[in-house]
Image 1 (tube, rainbow, N blue to C red):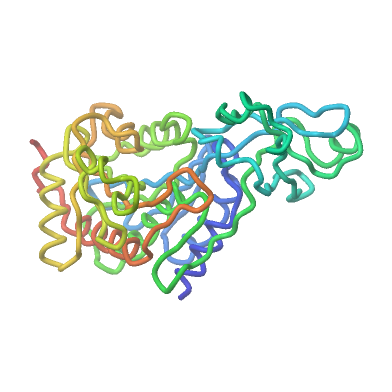
Image 2 (cartoon, rainbow, N blue to C red; image 1 turned 180 degrees about the horizontal axis):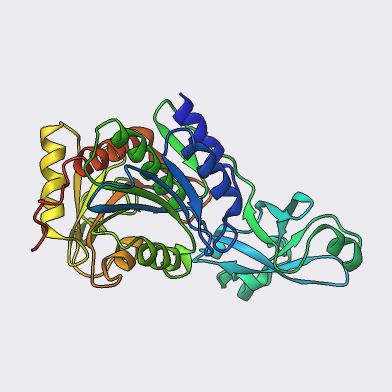
Length: 352
């Protein structure tokens, strides 16, 4: 239960790319309960380690940043215009409530748009753009608005995490605070398995802007093995029938997804599958014929190269405020990673 409570607290933070401090603080506080050492670097990446003097060095990474918005302009009337942080579907934004993270705390606002009654026929046919909407915080004018929110303040949609039932979790920012959660849980498990390797879990920053935190943290740690945890598209809901042809059949609750392809070390892939089968952990396989858009890509090509794997959590409704995953999938992903890492020694052959 404590792990679930930590997850809810972690998902409740506001941490768009470049503004991950709040999430990092919660993650590090939890890591301090069992890790040998925790720290943060100049980029904002958060680290926890067990068996630091061990060998080889293994890096587990999940990014803790989420997509968001940024205060860009305030009109004389006190309305706030924003720019996107990360990849948005702007059709989601109209009618939403938002939180602006300011020095004074959270400021509640609403996303405004011209009502459908007043839209001309041509306007109704056009897709919403981020620059078409504004945020109303109830300010009377520009001066009052700027007392509450500053240019550059981050904004997220005002949704807290919730469980639809005992297993299904819905929240914003599941992509990919859920990955940062899994790598910390894997570290908690592997500590009790007496690993030979030095195991580092990292909550990385700025993945949504180009895998930036994974590059700097992997360069600093110089691992031999790197396992990234992210989300992938579930293809078990309406509208995804055609996507199965390229993504495969991926089900929420069907187990963690092990990627296979150019971004993945084949020996490490085989080890993960072997562990899953021997430990009776359900798993799914995702085809990844090229570089993935995840931290695994940045980790793999750090320095002289890293033996890399990617574990994904099936996710419905990605980059929306109601992303949906299975808590059981999270637990199985952490267990799979921990038991695989516990088998890695200096003698483990990872040369393809």
